Amino acid sequence: MNEPDWKHLNAVPLPLQEFQLQLDQNNVNTKQLEEWRKIPVLYQLALEELKNKIKLIQTEWKLLDGFSPIEHIKTRIKEPRSIVEKVRRKGYEVTLDNILREIHDIAGMRVVCAFVKDIYRLMDHLRTREDIRILEIKDYIAHPKPNGYQSLHVIVEIPLILFEGTRWIKVEIQLRTLAMDFWASMEHILYYKFDKKVPEHVVSGLSEAARATYELDQKMLKLRSEILSLSEEQDLEESSEQPTAAEPSSKTLSLATDHAESRPQTC
Image (cartoon, rainbow, N blue to C red):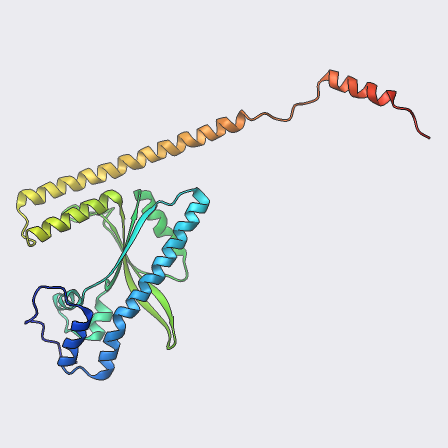
């Protein structure tokens, strides 16, 4: 397969239609082109399947615990330009086989939870499911990146039942707390603003903010544990104060006996 010529394209995100047009213009064979056109659809279907599974977990937690620690779910399909650039950075020719084999985040999902503990709870649940394959885990919460970035990255495969048979599609899941998500959003904005050439004092400030984010998550987790503990104690106190069935007094027993003795005897 001939590599498409991307040099003349500007920095504007490339729509799928234009991406396909570029492939057409580079005389890609029909079979490969048809497969290219399937990719965004298949990955979008995989995202929808996974999102439904996560929402089911969310609903089940609400039924069992009265609330769900999952705050929100976001999804995205990687832009064609970004896919091509990533394949090239890895040192591979831009072919369909290389993209499917080497690029694991064409479909991406971000799940934001309230607390760090909830992230690992969700991860443990995903491990038990037969309809999700865990391929790779990168724990940037336990081992943050040098710039302070924290998140749990998980590469999974989702089965799609198609006319041609079952096809497993890769999806990258990023699991974060609200604080981690806020930090990552700000970091992205700053790097975009400075065209990735961020001044040293800004980098230092981001690292300091990342440490504050970690401390905030730990403090909130501790407060949550204390609140749950107090709630359990309150429930125990309330249950112990509930009136129990009173035992019959001696006077009640005496009246019952007198009443029984005064009944007329029947033959």
